[in-house]
Length: 293
Image (cartoon, rainbow, N blue to C red; front, side, top):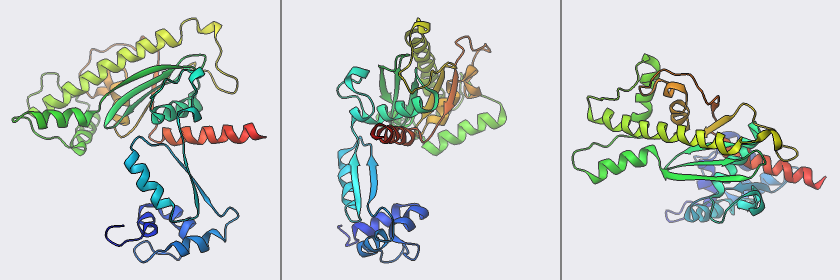
């Protein structure tokens, strides 16, 4: 590395304590000189010497750096692709992000088909399957922070709003029981409430269309063998802003923004899951193991 720090040392500093100790040994200190030799010595004490690392990526540059780090220890570095989750016959289209396919698989693992996932990050995506387990498709747009940053960057009068400020303001609405007003009386609140309203309105429309397309004549269709049927119409939210999305998609928008009190006529539920992509990876690995038996 440029500063002379070894890849093994950099890797050791990135890992949770339990994983660090598994790879380098409990005696190794991440703040000192962790070496490749330590990882090799520790691997020989395990029943399985090489650590298997399964990766879903959307950034090629970050992938190359990550691969270099794990090359410094005894490991199998496996990059997963779209076909590992859904093939073309199952509705995957060329260019569909493997991260979206992985989160869909995670949602199916928990709740079955049909599945609908909202993923809130730098970009906001939604992806869905139907009763038969085929990918319907989805949408991609800028995330909450991307929208706020673009307003600040492209205009002189609008302030920057950090992710921490957004989360803190949402938390205030939950604790106080007072939603952000539609007619905001501060610039930052005006920016936030408009972005939240956009996501809430779009999300409700997506859910309506999903129920319309995925559950039409569902009594005549069955999910693939080995998967569950999402009878309760559970929608899953994940990603860095998944908790905010989860509130905005609730009836009355979870009290984050003002809404006309009304029942949930669509009869769906919204559940958060920060680690959905990891469960998706775990699910396909389990399926591969079962297929070999």
